[in-house]
Image 1 (cartoon, one colour):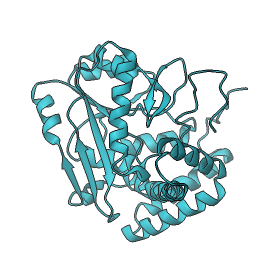
Image 2 (image 1 turned 45 degrees about the vertical axis):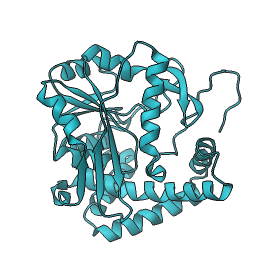
Image 3 (image 1 turned 60 degrees about the vertical axis):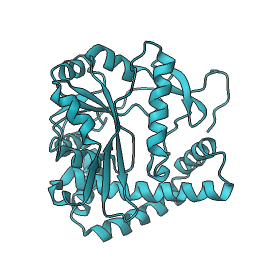
Image 4 (image 1 turned 180 degrees about the horizontal axis):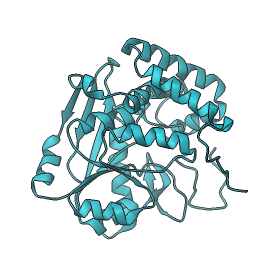
Length: 305
């Protein structure tokens, strides 16, 4: 398949839809908070109806990950996941467009002693992040307390990518492309903290298989590799929207112990266990729409989706 190309002129008609999306996000960033929650839930309900493929993926993931739940409970979690991620669109808009200091009294940051200890020792740290629905807003709130970097995969659409980069530059000092390992390691060795989310399926070549919610899942080995090369601790970071849909909780957990161990499967298993622990607090806030179990241990096995 030929690689999709984009015009160099940012005002090319091909980008008109992109500019409309950016305009929508900009306007919604300034809506009253109750309106954001209301519209976010409405968007989630709409997505459940029209995004049938994503709904199917979500249903499969939740069925595999929560086999102890009844079919009715699983379907309820599917619905809650769509509502939470619908709200997440409006939270993301807020984070990308606005200075989030107006939210400084609406979040609690627990476990800061773990990061403060690391920084006091003159070390950098790799933040173990998770694709929660409030991810971008959590990153912005985190930026009110700590200066750090983020690793990201550049968006293929250059206009939308510039919009994202500009928004995130408000609260991240450096945005490092996922392929730029040298820059990442250098920044960490120089004492920076960097946000990294390894909770998705990146294919067989970059992964080992380790259990995730009891299912063997392709799990990238890069977390341990980065920690070993940069000689920094890995600190898990939780980001939760509280049940009131108005306040937020960020929490650093203690650094992963005996990590990296030198055993790729053991290291990937520890990372997955930690991510799973964070997800279980509010499982509906996780991005279940991603095909987390796409790559199977046996290449001949039929797709789970």
